[in-house]
Length: 84
Image (cartoon, rainbow, N blue to C red; front, side, top):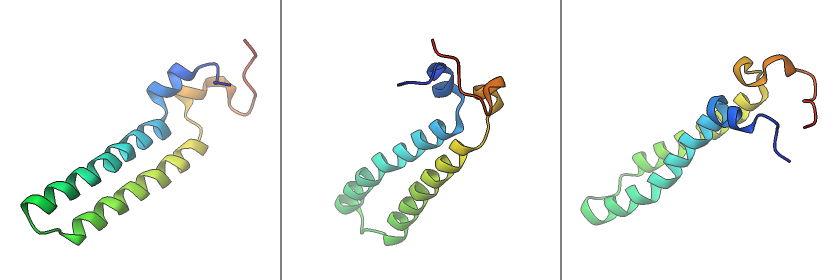
């Protein structure tokens, strides 16, 4: 079941923003690997860096998910939302 203000959560929640950014890095990594394999020698440090950034973004999204975000939660902090 979706939260009652799911549109607001998608727009303003930092956890969603960070996971979207992590998704960008997940998509870019194989593209970069393909381009690097065809044009230049692979650079292990760039691949390692992209993997580290992706992992850090995922961890940051988990941390952001547990913190209160006033613009998203409003007065519902600590209380279950009303049904409906």
